[in-house]
Image 1 (tube, helix red, strand yellow):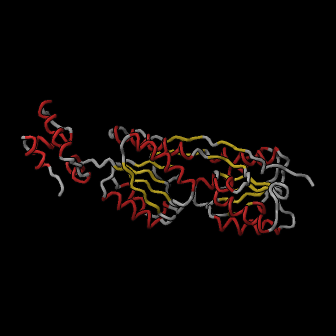
Image 2: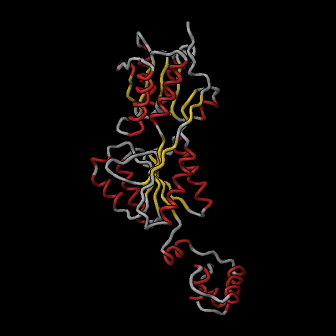
Image 3: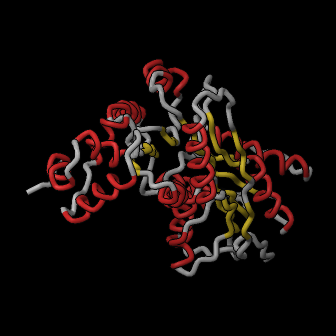
Length: 340
């Protein structure tokens, strides 16, 4: 049988209102009376209902987290960072996976609003939000703090944490150039997304800075997914004047490239060099030392969560906070140029 506030009030000899004030730490209660109530709570093994408490305090201590692909380790790392800070502040998380579907994202946002959450951390899908009035109005009418993590929403001015994708792609491409590569291909992400556009810009800047012509035939448009990179890599392998190196714009696409190389019995970097964007632990587990540009994913989650907490606590502040973190180049040998 569940214990109620009425049971605690009877056992401690006080009113239900007094018990409520002790539970919610609101209003004045004499220390002697407070200790009586706390003793009764302990003896009755009472556990307050989170739902009931939220109704009485108008606070749920719950944050919504919306990501486009929960199976991608990139977002798993971000969620890890978010969870670390949430635990430190005794906050709960409701996690939504939109599967890169804007309609599912809209549905998730509406659901979270109904749950009376206190704020949202979101990585928007790569869809062209600027053409979706329902999406924009849903975000703008949530009435709660929003923090973007590594994703942009056109014609909006939300708080956010981002990575310098231009620098990351520049550094990765330049590392290949320093090894002696001149024929360098790129497999882009979904060009509807800002990170994909920025990574292509960084690639082109690195080539131009080193007086290497930008050739359209070495630019391949992917979509961040394993399957697209696998198919594109098969095309690259068949090229008559194929590149000696590939810069790959995401971790899952790097996996697709590696599978294509393996099937064609091509060795890295002896037959072709590769640098990816974002790490993929499974490659290390398989003993494949693939160089990569490391976006500080866990740190993005931590910074984003701290930012959201700060916004919640300072609701009257109109300052828009946008933080850009720098990526790190991790070279493991797959970028080398092996002359034949």
